[in-house]
Amino acid sequence: MSVVPWLALAAGAVLLAVGVRSLAASRGERRYGRLVSIDAGAGVTLRSDRYRLVGRPDALRQRRDGAVVPVELKRGRAPARGAYPSHVAQVGAYCLLVEEAAGRSPPFGVVRYRDREVVVPWDASARTAILELRRRATGPYDGRADPSPAKCGGCVWSPTCDASAAR
Ligand code: SF4
Image (tube, rainbow, N blue to C red):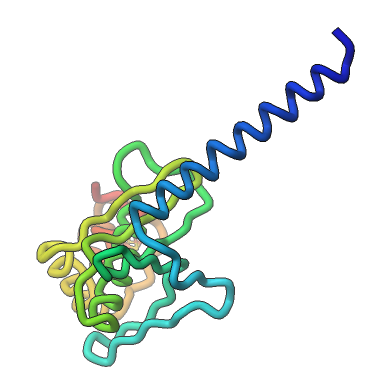
């Protein structure tokens, strides 16, 4: 076989791969709603005076039922199970801000890793966890730099710190 058919075959394979990816992306759009905001330097900044929180989600999607879903984009691969605790906390904070701004709760937030998306539920227990984290985080950070079970065990950041040695 000459080189030309091989090149055509390779080009076809690339086009097929691109097609599969865009199909997956459009399925994601249908699932999480249409894109209403994306952070390209001028995204929507959400503020809550009540919670004294400010955040700018990478993307906001609006579902057909009107609910707005924050989406956080990450370059790395997803961990084997769920999302990293710090990413869950970040998306949770965005959910709280969306709730304040839109006047209705998002059903969930999304962390979109390089290889897959992880849905982060937003419910009463998630809200309680974020509010508790916020309450504890208003205390001074004691600057401990070397993770160890002894240090991390008493650290308020431990539940959401990826480097914690206390788990
Ligand atoms: S939990 Fe994280 S922030 Fe807290 S002491 Fe350990 S490494 Fe530092």
